Length: 366
Ligand code: M6R
Image 1 (cartoon, protein in one colour):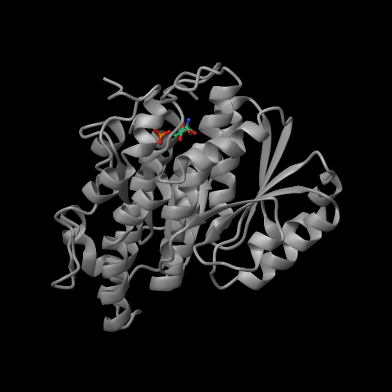
Image 2 (tube, protein in one colour; image 1 turned 180 degrees about the vertical axis):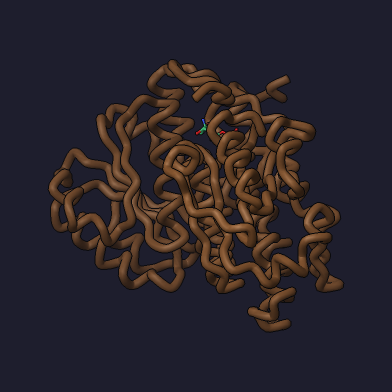
């Protein structure tokens, strides 16, 4: 049932070209330039007029929400707030009847996310679900939604569910932006083309698995890790750090790269591995100087870069390349090497990667 892989997690990482494609199937048609999210069609007129979107989730799903915040705001110009469901439910949040809430949950059973939905619903907001399990509690409790079609995720560490969530949320943002007229027809068409090309590009990233395994071997004995990214790669950094923590039990922190000099830079020495997610996007030059700052303090840098980058490979210790894509789609590629890195480090440390200690696949108690 592991399909020849040593662990479900590895199988699920390698399934991503398909799970991402499945999460677009019947929705995106890049040749005709159409995008249909069946579950949301009744709400599209209202959504196009939305004043505010609130996204709730926990753990990895919350990270997908952070990616979505950047994508939604960039394309639709609708203000977005992203909250931990556990905080939202207990802090007497301001919820208006014209608010839209998007609840993200792989399992559809997370207690805090369910409670956050119930609270927002009681205040009259419209609630959408982005779930992976058909008929799950959250799917039933929401007014409408769009399923991720990642297939069953067995490994406790979420991998293919995360990229499927980002895929679905990105489609939502593109569809709303198109309806609102906040993006040009040309950009709309381009995004659909770029999105359709993602599964094949993920396949290319997966070809680096052996190289990532070699890098993981070198860092197996690390006690700490820092992950840094800017813009859309900031949530990717958080997600990379969470993956490493939960399955290898190595302490890891994710930070926006520019925040480093407000504290974490004090941690950098020759024993500190720093993973930079430094793809060629609008913050590229800024992140290059952040890398210089870490190297000047002898940190050991692993950089995720865009294919063909000639600058960063000469500055850092290890490089992993991802193909070029539109800026807003980068997390779908840049998150993959981090999944593999944490997987191989955990395996080399002899951890039970599919069922790490103290964790359950779905957290149905608060
Ligand atoms: O099923 P959900 O998406 O609601 O689960 C939320 C979190 O419990 C989950 O993402 C958790 O953080 C994963 N173990 C992360 O890999």
